[in-house]
Length: 128
Image 1 (cartoon, rainbow, N blue to C red):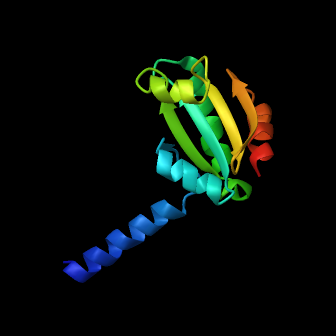
Image 2 (cartoon, rainbow, N blue to C red):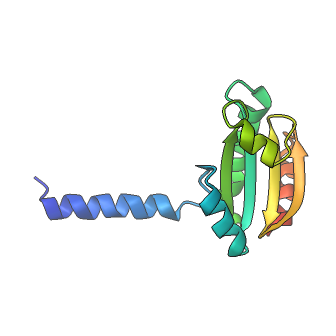
């Protein structure tokens, strides 16, 4: 039977393993976004809606690309098109399925409704 120390070690290992995953999407957080910009990190803002078929197509493509070593520093922030209208306006998005790439503080590319893996990859590469 595991001891408390073993349980704590296992928990810590699981947390570290989760933190090591590249570009796990996170809900948009202004402070984290600004910190990533200040650090000059590549950033992707993903504006989607749960009912959007294009957004559903984009998610596995983005997950596959984010798992590649070259995108290990990519910060991915998600915004819900329906419930976070203030953020949708802040990023001047007109539709769900909008992907916005940043290199630090500079927007370097934007895509709406794109589902071609090669084109999404090219967008992410602009942020590197």
